[in-house]
Image (cartoon, rainbow over all chains, first blue to last red; front, side, top):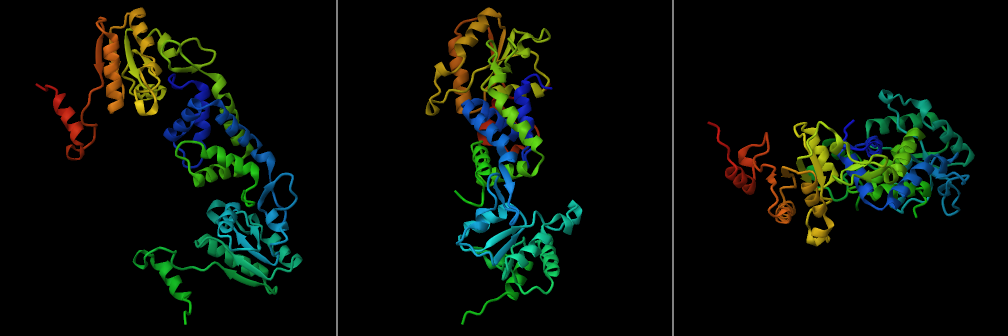
Length: 203
Length: 203
């Protein structure tokens, strides 16, 4: 233990150092910033961190994050949203990204990850059985597989398609192609191949 | 408020967003990481942040950070350290950097900043009068001005030199020159000028 850093400060530096991508220097900077700031700032952080696990729950239908006193996610109960169109995403924060587009008016289903044998995530760790139930219960008409354009995302999408079997539901996935604003010459080969395959008729 | 992010989580994201250099995406990543981790992790962070201000005090001699139940910094009271050599630094974490060298065996004086009229830091905001007192009380023989090699660092060093007046104390400052491992061709002009001025005799 370095005597230049008193233990209470070293404890906070260590706690910050647990966060993803935070090295010792960054953790020091965060802790020292809080120490120099009004104590209200660290109280707010402390209280938010304390309440986190007790105040957040998971919607039993969509598996989106909800407040502990809510029964279902407002994204599921909102009457302006169609229960018959379901976007299937890997993680809760993928919902935030899709909601920011303001162009989706269905509801969601959070898988809780993507197939990844290396990380020990197999079919049983994902909420696929619950998704199949929802298709039957809510008479889902379209399932948008909004998983990442990665190997894990693709194999998870394939698995879901298999599990759904011959249920009368339309299965779509997000278009692959050139990101808006990116020059063709900088696009990678696979993206460009997907963009060619998915070419759209203009006239 | 985005209904995709429940309030308790949004609160924590906002609290993380107050930290220096943390944007909305990073704050989201930190908060979501804590949510996915065992609740022990957020408890540890929460407790460390709560105790921070009450458990940390400032040494009345060196103005280094100490634990609230310590009277003086161990860097001051340690009998193996000479009170007659004082390194003057801007901020408490500068002590950590100097201690890591393991080649300084005197004690420290933290100014609490550097002269910076733009940020409203004038001579009265710095612990210079206290430093002058220490020179008299502890019969300090050498003062190492270990301030940054910046305009603020240089002007603060100059101010301290003036305030000390004709007291019989040797005043030194950290050498300016080429950082170890840096090629001469990549060194900036001012650093190279200082390295020339401070050239050392080999034989």
